[in-house]
Length: 284
Image 1 (cartoon, one colour):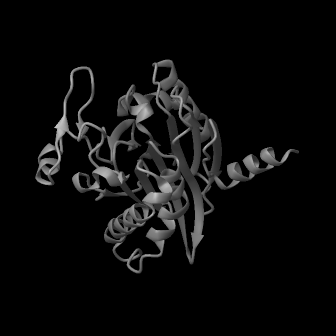
Image 2 (cartoon, rainbow, N blue to C red):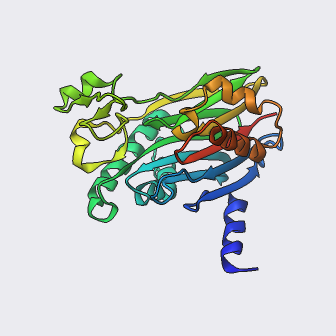
């Protein structure tokens, strides 16, 4: 077996996405055999390298099992989402109050991580990355955080509910202008911060950082018997599918990896041209 193939198999086994044009993998919980995950990434039609990265794995930490799931969608950068993939969860878990006050720990870890990225701007360049992260604690509690427009959706009894917040410039215009920035709205284009960035919150983006925010929205959900699955995906999916469309399209697909692949392929069928990354976590 060639070296690259061995590496790909290893990444699939632990559930790590890569910067390759397409990646996929699957895994399952040791706490509950009914909880499984799968992911699928596919490069868009742009000329630049793939800028989406994913994390999907179950990890034992002391006496607890953590399901760690994330989508990092870079813009003008693949170094920053790759750094986030490698470091953000470690930073969160190492926070001293993670187990007692996880929301505060996550907010602090996001801030520390952003500060580190800005300090490394000479290495990482001028780009940035959005993020949506989900931490599943012992298959019982889910903590979702995000900056930007990658999204997390939970489905219960067939009904989709968005857990993250789309941080769009038009909805955060006032705070952007209070920081001295502006939101452009040119005909035929989406609103952009300082005429550049189509999201109001992100990691990095040092050149316009004083007008941006890296504070995440955080949501906590209990996992009940009627919880069916969670979807995490980059905006390459959500540009062409609603939350309920996505949930409906995979409700009969029991294999999580197949469900993630189906979502990505459906987005392509609907003419999405962006990088597309999907993670599905199934509870039934």
